[in-house]
Length: 237
Image (cartoon, rainbow, N blue to C red; front, side, top):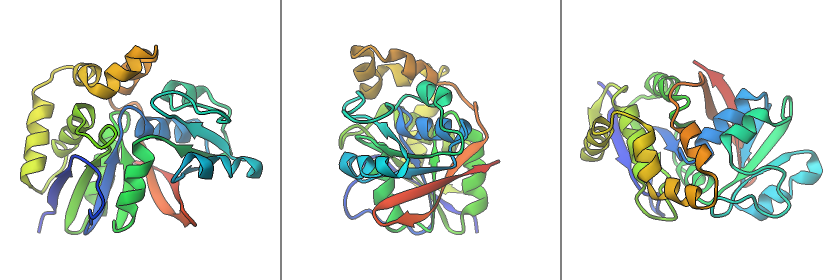
């Protein structure tokens, strides 16, 4: 039987997943995650908090992330996909902590059988991975913006559902309709609250970068955990 296609627009406690999950935080954590692995990072770790991320600095990790868009004190890098592509991370482990994306992934990892990170950058590759990994369900979890619905992540979810085969739930159908309403991927990202917030602090260039489609065949796939950290490794499709 074809898998159920399920959309969860907002992360919240109590969510449970039966099978395969794609986590989306297009502005910017899942886009930046792809960029770090493209730049040669050996592993990408998601931390549950900034303090947990900083605790790995002494072990040689590159520490990256943001609070309300800006690089936190003590971090080596922010949450910019363009910065990540240029970063000296080849062969190194990177740990990330962000406002929305890393927390959504941690929530999904509690129950998902398989989990990966999706963005516009790896859109086709992420869809192929999910289709091949799924047995009964492919869920897309949008990270949203600080507990609220995000147009940007929903647009990406719709783009994924347009590429996936299965039986969509109402949420997946709605996301696909939102995707079909826009011709240019930059438009929903720029008008979304996350995009406007970055523009307001002078980081609007990252919104344009995140809107580029199929820049990479890299899919960050959850390989396991180390204590409270999620460990992602690169799969190319």
